[in-house]
Image 1 (cartoon, one colour):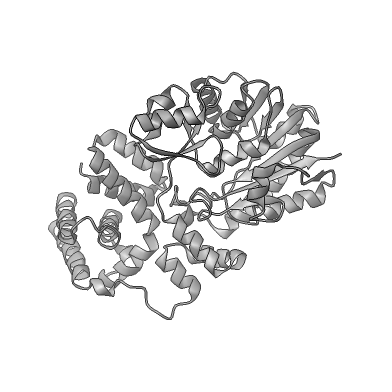
Image 2: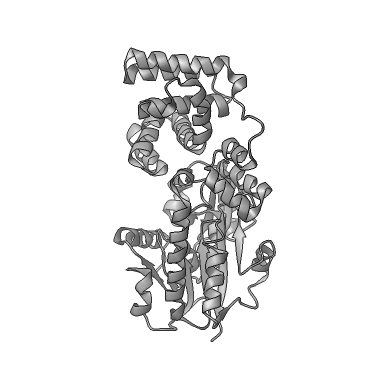
Length: 446
């Protein structure tokens, strides 16, 4: 199977079965045994096509006589990934794109389909100067088409952040994500790990955001490296690394991680505690609880104890005031990680956000009773929607007068916080070229 055929199959599965593109692609790549170059091309085609979906369909609509929606799903996705190459990948000659698509259509369908594919793509080639977004559109519609986002989401971000920031969010969401790793400081220092990486020929640099983070600009899949296998590093986004730093657990503390899977932040907290103390890592699903346990084992961490259950019922399971620190990394819409999961922007709705925000309020209310007086509760999400973030935290503070914002959260936190205002820090995807994240530190005073 060629890279393009694999991409076409994955895109069709994603569309027809509502599959996640990353899971579908990883599964297909494992079965296909493509070369490194073809694996890269297939990955680019899948993520790029999903990212640019509405822009591709907007232009295809001009050239497909019966309309894009009436095409068979595999034909529609073949045209999409072909147009994506023409519009966004300048290293592939356009005629090679057409020939590959026609050959694929012949192999998969009948002569009529391959003729139609050939006609559509050659017509696009002849009229490439027409592939421009028309003037006179509303700002929201222009941003939605130029940066390929659903218009309701663009409208929402404009109302929340203003036009300039909304467009910057959309632009950043289409950039390739950075590769960053967290050093397991119970085994090795960041300086030592950087030295090892550079000696191995990797282009690596210390993260400016996290003291345990390293940005890896070249080096392949870090989860396949000996450092990962031996538990010296974990693959984690820089924004996500800030969460354990905000919890600031110290050796000997008792910590509750309410929604812990897959365990990256749990393990980071255990590393910061030098594996001394206890972390109760809870997740709703048994198979996800196992993931947390596997992470802890790989990293050589014994202080993590995994449990399964609904986070809303933790208050019935543990005595009130029995934890020094609580992390609620809450279920959310995920709108801060669109760069990594482009499907999200096409599947989420405004109604979803309202329902999730309601659950977040319930969770915060429920687990807060488990924090001791003087303890710190950190609320975090990987979304950039104020309703789920600042809105949820402000609602909690209004209804829980015994809680407030800690007086001293440290220099690093204050540096981040000064860019946001409000109870927590809102990181947007364009701020540090990391995931969009929200983190709030709350202290129990009575």
